[in-house]
Length: 447
Image (tube, rainbow, N blue to C red; front, side, top):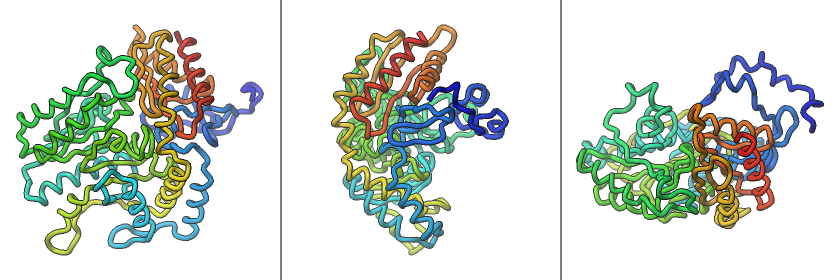
């Protein structure tokens, strides 16, 4: 549809944009040149001016099965007519029990206890609290220190911020973050691993920094280590070959819990249900959200090992964990998640990223000669193209490419000068070509 012949949508007027304080957004910049979508179907959004926008990042890493899935919307509609809400404290309804059973069946071995949240941030904070309470429950009350990683993102709660490692997220709150937190070094090493296909070859030794932190703080004082198997928000930072296995060896050796934040990697993004299965490393706790409901209703889930759960089920009969949310296991979220699982499993989407991985990486790595490209990273059905910073300032070139892509018909994620791509798992080869054609054109225009 021709933009000039399309009447402006009423929601596009500046008057109607003023009151909403947008999250993780340069509000003045956005409201000067709004990017608004009003509907979505399959792989495409429809902008308010009638253009099709190819979704190159599954919404916000969450719409893994694409948009407008009637199976999910109809399940939610049926559920809201039958039961809109039920209290989650000292009460229940059948759906979270059914969903927990379904999720336990696809989880890594032993991670068969589910605690429901409403977001990835809540999942991260819940996992940290469970880890601390578990150490106390088994008589290891000195284990209060938490270890995160540079460039890690674990949401915006004070727990997740504290173990997270993205400076921009932390700096305004640095005086109020949790005490007793340390960080491993990140694994991004462009000098040795630029343009890697799949997991990079170099960097496994960075996991050994955990041994240094153990020596510094004492194993008896460390409760848990939390990492993303793949750091998505930092710009698709991949674990070197053997890195996650080495973290698992060190944490097990010292009695430290290992937590995987799979809010982005969960539900098929890199193949299999979870990265833990694709890369053969089982943590003690695993967090999820985003793809759990295909983005349709806010929901998160924390997968906890049976042994951890059993440690809480000792002593007097009463509340074992003083933690939870008003909307834990919400009926609508459960209905959406169950329908999403049916789609994922019925359409074989957990294997889709593996099936397309070679084609996807070939296509992405074929962009290496574009202007200003300094690195390309890819695995499963996720990738990133990192551009050299503009001399006028870091992030300017990346943002201009992001904005140009939207104008030209594709939506990506922009982290500084890194553009992340993670299209819905229903994409095919022709649409991969189209997505990267739009992206390449935008890079050339900005250059």
